Length: 46
Image (cartoon, rainbow, N blue to C red; front, side, top):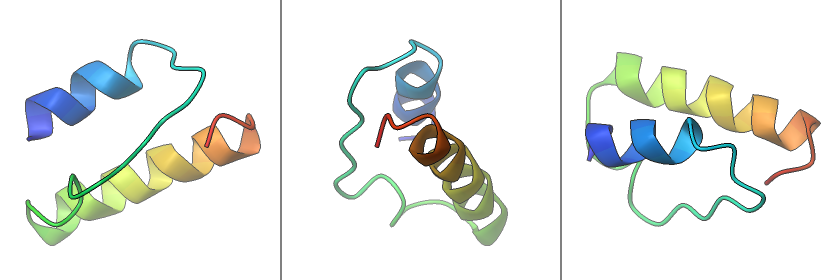
């Protein structure tokens, strides 16, 4: 799941849908994902 998330966030998406991507992984991974998603939100991608 980490690889899929990494590929998705580095492809400059116009829209980013998240299902259960954050339910897997440790706390550090979830925090990194949350920060990246918040950056997308600021850029109006999410």
